[in-house]
Amino acid sequence: MNFKKVVFVILLVTLTAGAAMAQYSQSSTVAISAIKGESMTVTGAGLSQYTIGTWTPQTLTISSTWNLKPSRATVQLCVYMGAGGKMTGSAGNSGVIDDTMVQTKVGAGSYTNIDAGNGCGMTGAATPVNTYTLTSANRVVTTANSDTVNVQLNSAAVPANLEADTYNGTLTVIGYAQ
Amino acid sequence: MKSVLIVVVILLGSLASFGQTLSLSASTLTTFQLTSDPTSAQTLSVTTVVGGFFFVIPQVNLCAYMTQNMNGAAGNTTSIPDSSVQLNNTSIVTGTSNCSVTNAYQIANHASALCFCTTKTYNDSATVRIASYPANLEADTYTGTITLVAVAQ
Image (cartoon, rainbow over all chains, first blue to last red; front, side, top):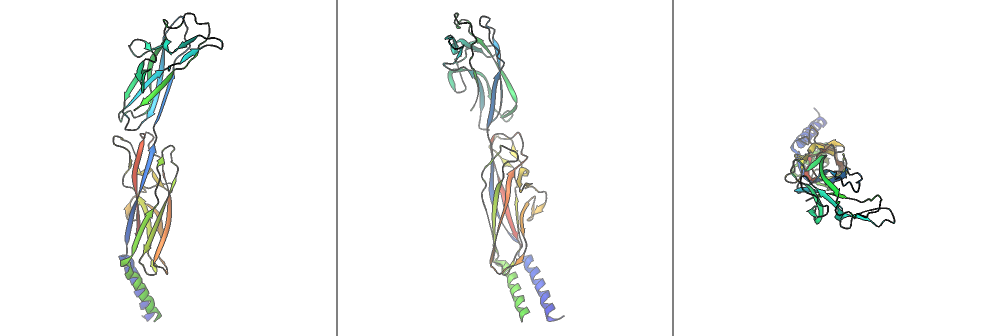
């Protein structure tokens, strides 16, 4: 074996030994985070046109879904017409059916003014329909809840001298999480 | 004489491994918005600096892994599995061992090479996103940790 070969072998051995001895590592961490935002849908349906004089109550159905933070404790559903809310007729017709003439009833209760109750962050301004206590089992609701409230026009309050007309107004349904 | 010199150089290079250094730094990630699946991607930049060698740059292998799911606040029973965290559109949970870590994702592997330098800096990057996460995740902020590891040899 000549000198060059000896040197080559030494090189190989040295490199191998060096590489074997040299494994070392370093680590670091990176924080990763993601947000799933809260969401809620609330819709109302089921009311058709009332016939003034017949006074038949109707059922308003409130459908709701949500995905809420663990820090939320309850969801309350309400309906209201709002102070100053009114059902109005055609242009030139000054007659109205205002919010004091619309009544609601939840379950077996009695009819009261739609804007007389406390709920959904409002005092004396809404009808609370239902309150859900949130748990890990219902913080995410994808199959809509269905809640109902009876709605009628107060026959004793609607003016007897209303002009013959179609009167339109708006009820608001609301979901209130806290 | 020339060969002897080469041997000395290589010997020094190998022996110098005892003083080799390796540092690792990375960019930060902003909070992912779980409004789509997969989420929009972010770029994670990683800088690796290896030093203390003598002419022979060691092989540098860079990997990333997670050891836990991303969890939300107390009371939240849902979580984002670590397997939903993707680097370069591939789950970080690879099912294979990289950088001597089970289920690590290999970001880069720089081969050993000769270099007339004393330090070598590598700038690598990987896209990060969250994909195929549970549809029933509760509204919350989910946090976790990605560990980066560089191995030089």
